[in-house]
Image 1 (cartoon, rainbow, N blue to C red):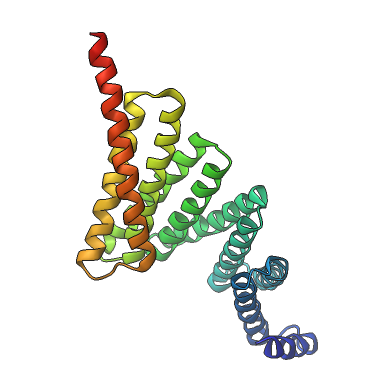
Image 2: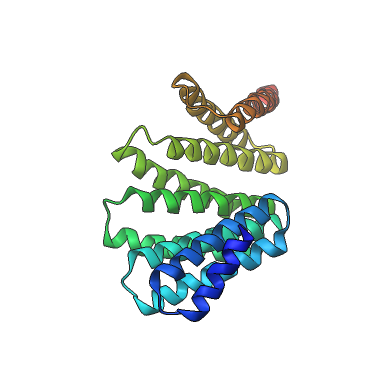
Length: 249
């Protein structure tokens, strides 16, 4: 793959205005960035995504109305954001996801019927919710999780069988449950534990629906096990709080 990328790079130097060569080089850099990330070479991964983003932005500069160029800007920013997240560059990752979402929202405004854009926005918001949770920004994490569900809900209204939107919605509900559980550990409020439990149960319901349809994957199975544990803990904590309240009456 690297040899092919080098050949494309050399070809692009000779023909910088060849749209097909530039797009092929973009795709090659994206793929190489993913490969480097999978092998935990995050520095090299980031460099490839930066190059892919540069190529996409050049294409957008040459043709500002191009759907493909703007879509490539989205993909490159998301790829870069995931690598930045793994590298612990949380602020930079949030900025990259935000840029990807911004462009996707522009594309959706131009074509509201394109559910791909709503899914892109929803999945990007979920990634941001995870980052906000890591840095203990609970209000932002909840807001991003809610936006995730709203955007994936838009997809599911038009295509109820869209598996990825179901999966990301389940993940967002699980995350929201974890946020409420974290808040409950701080204030031990009945409402926080109740909301945590509600989100855990709603998430489990979606995963079980995927399982019933034969669409569940290994990562989903692991989350289901984790959800069962989290639900038991939240239920136990909620009962403790209720008992304390009752004892004071």
